[in-house]
Structures are given as C-alpha cells and as structure tokens.
Image (cartoon, rainbow, N blue to C red):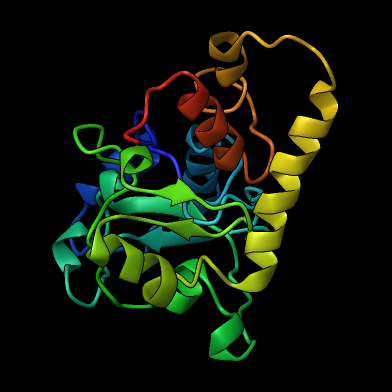
Length: 208
C-alpha cells in the first residue's frame, strides 16, 4: 500500500451528484471514473498493488466507507478507490482486497496524507506485510488478507528482481525512489511499494 494523492474528480461525477435522486447505481459514466482512479493510483490496486486496468473486467470501484453504512458518501470521490478483483468467486481464504473486505471497516485510509500508510506498515524478508500497530496488522491479515501466500510471493519476487537488476551498480537511492513511490506521473510496476520501502529504509526515512 502507498498513500494516494486524490486528484480532481470527473466532471460527470460532480454533475451527477447535483441531480435529484442521484446515487452510485444510477451514475452512468463509471468508465471515466475508472480512468481517473487508475491514473491517480498509477495503475495499481490501492491495497495489494497488483495491476489494474480501467475496464469492468480489469478492476472494481471500491467505497472505502461502504455504501450500506455510509450512503451519504457513495458519490464522494474521496471515498472511491480502484481495486483488483481480489479472486472473486474463490474460497474466502483466497479472497483479498475489497472482495475480502466487503462491508467491513478499515482502521486506516490510503488517501490520508496526514497519516501516511507507508509509516504504518513494513515488509518482511518473505514478502509479508506487518505493522507495529495491532489494529493495522489485523486489517492487513483478516480484513484485506494481504498476506495470502501468492501476494507475499509476488512482493518477494518484485524486491528480488529489483536487487538482482542492480548488480554492483552504485545506487542513488533518492533518485531511484521516485521511480517506485508514485512521485513521477507514470505507471508503477506491480508490488512497487516493497521496493520503495527498501529504498526508504536505506535513506533512513522510516522508523527503525
């Protein structure tokens, strides 16, 4: 996970919200909404960081605060994220991200620059995510299932591939970080945050 800087909402969403009886279900321009979410998330699911595409088959639109419990936020762009399919239709122990989360509440937001999620999580050598905060740790494991074995292995492989590509090259960590943390206005590699975390540790920008 990485902190997402929310951009301007699609004009069609603003216009729709001003209509009588407007709700999420009768918002017709979800294609533009998908494009906006994928662009600001640099092409990655906001939770597991697998690749998403701006099509109904390539992603889902998630409400961070669920529609059932927070109907007033169903058209709030700040409440909307782009997420992967999360193994829809599979047994629950293989589901992850919004598919696993459903209407459960999360104790953190990935769109809160005042409390960046990067400072709440860390990565282990086996690719698993964890946190010193028990509530965040529970959310990672039980609500989002982000340590499902395949996700952990993908993260481990992403870091291993990055390190292997370095060879004996002397690295400018600060310059390299911009390629992995979303600072550049370009698509990020899948599972990029484990590499960003490695670079942030090298730069001593994360708590010990």
